[in-house]
Length: 143
Image (cartoon, rainbow, N blue to C red; front, top):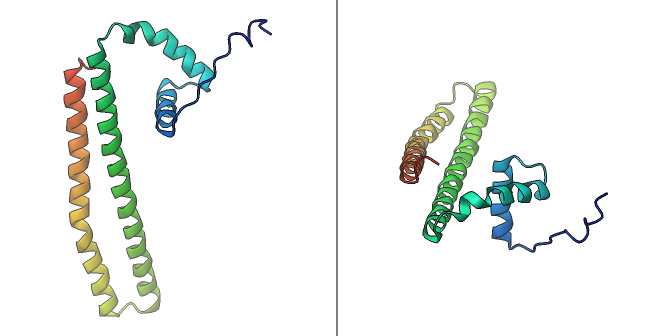
């Protein structure tokens, strides 16, 4: 064991938001643990240190915007999946119990029609996110 292990130990207390960001960074680095992620970040520090503070702040803003867009995309897709599962469940019950019940089938058709605007919004949000990523990556040189 390294005799300096205790002397060379670093402990950091992070806010919930900082910890969430660190976890995303750690996953992006494919680090097995926090120590490995910190070591990789230290190796990357010379590259980041050459960028002016404004560029670093710009990158953080991009990350926050992207995080919000991704969260909205995931939330919308999760809700749509739940709605589709409910409709599929109703269709299975109708098919098995009373396949000639027009009221039930009309309800199912109406629910599916109501999902189309949500699907269109989800597609638009996905396209906006792709366009946003492309624009921001082009702005920073495809980094």
